[in-house]
Image 1 (cartoon, helix red, strand yellow):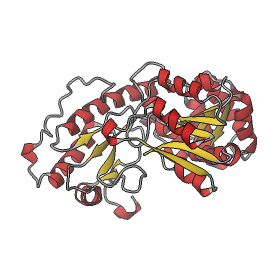
Image 2 (cartoon, rainbow, N blue to C red):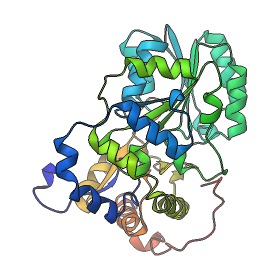
Image 3 (cartoon, rainbow, N blue to C red):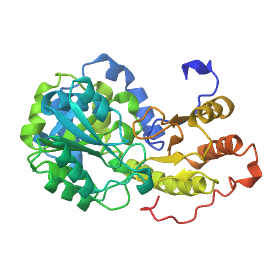
Image 4 (cartoon, rainbow, N blue to C red):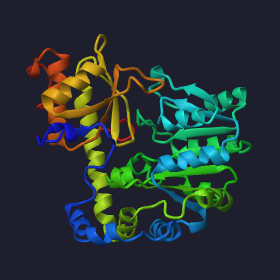
Length: 369
């Protein structure tokens, strides 16, 4: 945006953020209170966490709030990961990079493209046993592919690994799941001896700039992380948004439904492009593999310079290559720009060959899209 020299900012298909929340009314509210928000210290994290827990039906002693989920990943690594950690790849990079930076052994379990990057619980448990990993991680839905493990399978994994030091379920994109009505396992984590659930509020609320997330675990685990965190690790913007949650909850839920509809439409539209592989997702993004002979770096650059569209190519993500792009789910008017740009690059400008006009909404099973 700084480099655009006052021109129109690019449409962001790179950063996975909710486009429907906050509403304009919420931004107006924040704007009216900007002086107070910036001028005074926030409450301490315990006060903010108590309000969050009251809104979400959680017990404060089972929750620790962080300045973004990355802060919590850092403290979990420092405090609770002793020697080794198993993690499927591809996934969110901090789950591999953070423990490597502190000298831990990271056992990387490859998710296979031939299986659509789906996680096989039995095979992953076998991998953990064979490697002797003391901590196991899964992201559900996974990033960058959006693959989703049903709740009963997550619970089976937790049961199988009850003897580990720690099992972490990163549900940073869990609010976007519509494959089943109650997908998360936070309630189970609160009463299990070795489970942490990690959740992000910035992604769900469309407010990455605020930097806030939280973890749920039994009181001993949650307290250990909470006690290590700085006294004022949450900012005043985060506090104001947490205290606004109940008031604007219907608008938030409506935005999630709209995003689910957009995901199904976008999945179908991308699937009509010859040679393009589109992977089923329950996140707010779709992973695509470009046709043979195409690379994501020149496509990324073409989309940005020629169409004002910013995408994430995955060449630096362990377990994928630059032939993969992660595309954030956005409203249809933005998707049109993306499809036209991709079509122009991939098919030599033969726009008439690709049904970009076919932005009709045919029903797609949410489990498949």
